[in-house]
Image 1 (tube, rainbow, N blue to C red):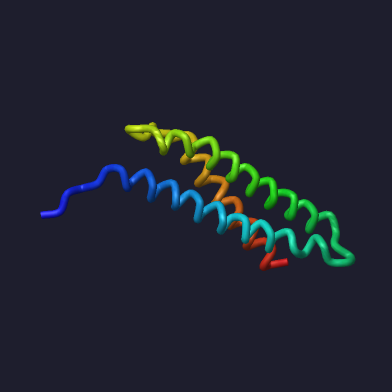
Image 2 (image 1 turned 120 degrees about the horizontal axis):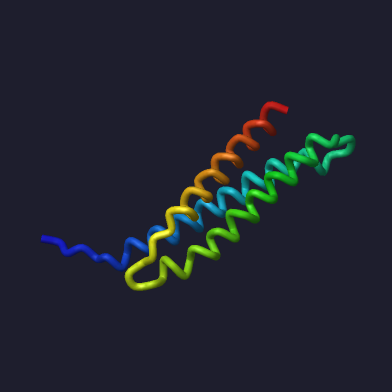
Length: 101
């Protein structure tokens, strides 16, 4: 019979937040790419600004959430998790807009 290690769960969650942040950075950079081409219009600049702003918000939320995951026992943060999910979904929509442009 295996014993459960409750200390590993917060570490896995912290690593998942890090992976999501890295994925969001890639999406934001790809969404900003059309804005640096010659002849880029205001739409490209707005999408790039929104994508980079969304990534910055995700990074700030992850930094805010990290101490709560290191605490013993980990502190819940339902508002941070909801905000992280909404921003991640918004970045996915922005990525889709860039593909359609």
